[in-house]
Image: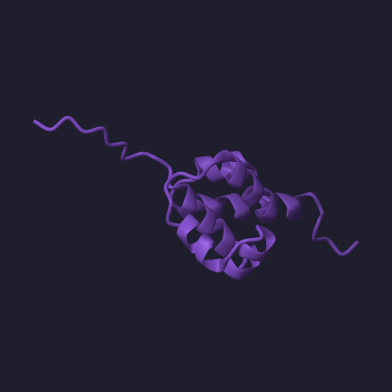
Length: 98
């Protein structure tokens, strides 16, 4: 019997970054520019399961998204998260014409 440690529930941070980036219609080039890096770096970053805390903080600021949201997202949660924000803003009169 092979004794391997496999965490199938591990959050894929790079994938979460990509989901948020796409929801906000932000290009890899724009993100790279803000991080003072290259588009290739962002592409590699989005394929990483783990991202160091310092980089994650910078990405969260640029994406205007709490770090915990990035860390705790699963499946369709970015869509649900942003829909909830939009719905709450509408309820609070952010989109009213008065």
